Amino acid sequence: MADALRDVLAQARASLVNESRAVPTVASLLDAAARRLGHGARETLFSVINATGVVIHTNLGRAPLAPEAVSAMQAAAGYGNLELDLETGRRGSRHDHLDALIAEVTGAEAGLAVNNCAGAVLLALAALAAETPVIVSRGELIEIGGGFRVPEIVAQSGARLVEVGTTNRTHLSDYERAVRDHPDARVILRTHPSNFRMSGFTSAPGLDALAGLARAEGLLLIEDLGGGALIDLKPYGIADEPTVQASLRAGVDLVLFSGDKLLGGPQSGIVAGRRDLVAALSRHPLARALRLDKLNVAALAATLRLYRPPGDPVARVPVLRMLTQSAAVVAARAQALRALIADLPALEVGVQDTVGYAGGGALPMQALPSCAVTLAGPSLGADALARRLRTGTPPVLGRIERDRVLIDLRTVADAQLPALALAIRQAGEGGKSTAP
Ligand SMILES: *Cc1c(COP(=O)(O)O)cnc(C)c1O
Image 1 (spheres, rainbow, N blue to C red):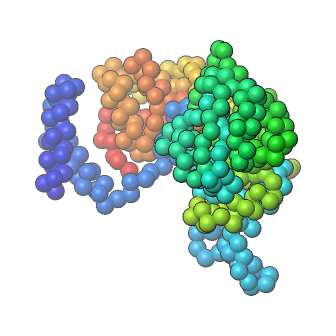
Image 2 (tube, rainbow, N blue to C red):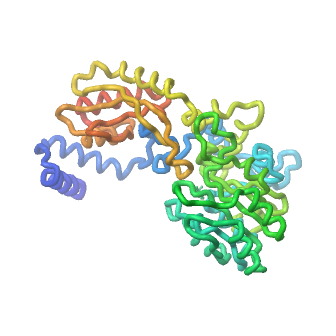
Image 3 (cartoon, protein in one colour):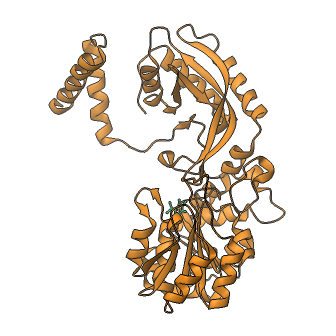
């Protein structure tokens, strides 16, 4: 108790000095201390309303799952036939629930899922390229964030990095020379630049040309696609994202991608490609260390099933639904929210067009025309209002622009509007932020 009071007093002193806030009341200090004490014993992970407009938001847990995936996780939570063949009563494999499904929806010969895409890259290189040179363009030696750096993953796999080309330009002849100079090389690795874009004087060989070279020289072409879209998003104005199927068609031997980015499933790393190579990955000891747990097996299988014909993944997978909904639909939701909070005396409420983002290290620069409700309090700065929203029930994450809090409706579901309106009302009325 004393520690909690001391912390709260220190924080209050700091905000008096740094932000010249009004002196807090004793009651509010006691309240804050009680909340702090409660937090120690209570949950730390809450459901929040994502009003940032960033669809695949890594800090907010990336892809929100489809209801089908949530029910599948619930069903798998107790005992289940995860590794049991119910027909024969013999031991089965957890991979049986996923491998054929991955192959079916990607069009690959075979599939495998592990804990995440970083794990899939590590496993693929360890199984297929350990102690041999791996050829990578200098333009693709990227860092994704969260500690994923291509040179370090290559090193951890036991392979040796061979860099070709320059930062901005790599030609097919650069790869050809590296193949000639390193006769023991078995793998060419291609990585999607994800959250990094080069423009201007740049070039890289097409995937077809690279696959042709790999085939002619008896090498494997492995592609770390990162985002991993299974449907073409071009008709929805999302131009830059290649599909898994296109990479396989171009002749990539193994495609690796995340389950919780554009696929819209749980955290996982998916491998799709040649049967013999997928088999080599599943036999490697790292496959056991990187295996998916039963809840993710269930959620991933349910998500992948949404992609099977005649399904409609764009309507059923939340990530795809949010990415592809028209600006008019988002604007209508913004008007609906405004109507729910228009009577709030403490806040100026407006609606404005804005820009959301796909995010998630998949296509973070992909701008999505969006619409936001704007909130401003005459006596309350945007930072303070944003903080109240963030610490309310449920927590609401918006973004600040020109001293107003923007509530971007692209990433909010219609069903969340009543709870969102209530949370804004509480924040605006300056009432106690009752932490969840
Ligand atoms: C996001 C990303 C990864 C890491 O994926 P995780 O599933 O988060 O491990 C690896 N490579 C690329 C190109 C990515 O975009």
